[in-house]
Length: 145
Image (cartoon, rainbow, N blue to C red; front, top):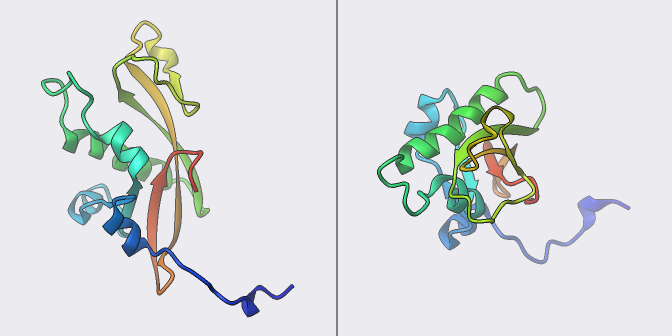
């Protein structure tokens, strides 16, 4: 079957996903500081769970620091990767409220502290949009597409 002959009946662009709040475009100043030259997008699920400050942690952490952790750990893992799909890990501090997900484990080095989760995320580098072939990086949970 020749897929190039298929008629496109609908598209959902990156621009629309950002406008709808399903994707968050990371400030390029932050990503460039981490050594990333392409635009970086986080899914809403990653942003809400691993970047937003959990209640009660306001005096311990800040949003910019949590975002930096995600971006920096991606950048470190990407330096040794030569494919478009990459899984990477980082420690994230979250309240232990029983809301653990399949991509979260206790860090073996911090077994006595259940607020530190070893989180696995994935990223893909692909065209930024269906009408913009320039590269962009999309960071998401392993269960997301």
